[in-house]
Image 1 (tube, rainbow, N blue to C red):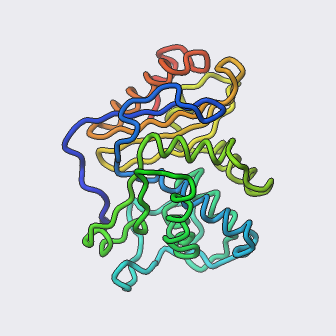
Image 2: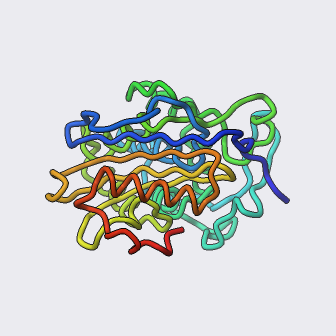
Length: 272
């Protein structure tokens, strides 16, 4: 069974936003344009979960039974299946701690973990985080795989500028507490589906969150290296490109914007 996602784009678009350690824009193109967000919205879900934990509303060490069945916008249950499933995720009913759900949502982009956390904190909590950060193009309006929400026109969107601002906040903004900050950095540093990270040379510290569905491929990463002037945050969003071409375009931007941190051209031939 194939669960619904966004309609494929009809035009090719490429957007990026590069920030320095202070959050100032160093380079941008079409950075405020909205794109279907794919899994990049998981950064906003992560922030909502960590905020709830810091406010004492959640305990990250609490264990819940894993699930792949959730409640849609119509009040009916739906079950994730097919490509929406992470084969390494615990089977339904097996115990899993909230901190592990949060980590798996980021480092391997688990949709089961994302929807379970979204049901726990609520879409309104994510919207509150989006509002607090002043994000102008970001909407997180539905769970992943919710057909009823899609039929109602609900979607998940963001922009390169908003992704860069979100990542900057996670890494260098008004900081989360030590435990929350370390969880976020460790999960992003352990990213199993890197795009920007695959282009960086050995010794550069980075963390990221990518996202993709047919016709859309995005990545946002923090890069820490003295050669590039300390911290940099780069977000790149693509639409209308095949996976290999999207990765090549993202790699080219990394080399153009962060040349000191990038591998030599050709070193990432197996990217993607």
